Image 1 (cartoon, rainbow, N blue to C red):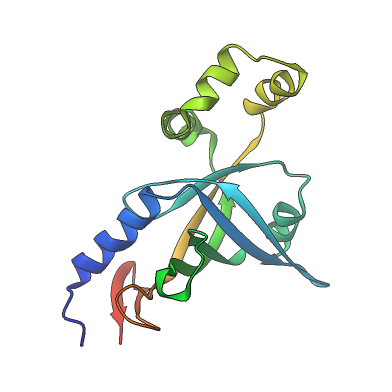
Image 2 (cartoon, rainbow, N blue to C red):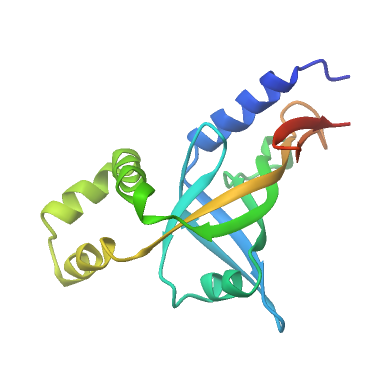
Length: 171
């Protein structure tokens, strides 16, 4: 039924990630599960980078267990329009040597941040600007992606699995 190559599917995932802004992250600790939605940027390896305080529930959970599930999707009103990504992987804090470049890319995608950081308009924006340079920067490194696309057909899916540091198609 599906004759797309591995590269075609990877490009589909990359395009989907580049065309969306928020990811929901499901994490867990020894007592409960939690979900949080954050803005992200992605790279060509389909890693997702996001900002978050180390005081949040999801970052606290990740310090206990780095394994997470994610979803990226657009809210729609009918089932035939559902398109999205589901994935699993690990989250860790980004090292200081990569931080400046990733933050610059983050500001490039979210242009409203540049104005906010340069000229905060109110106390809330001043608080955000002050926290921006010290807030935690994290990376989600995927090991599995499932593409869902009901616009192709109901229940259409394609799956990628990381195996020996390379993506493969799960059939």
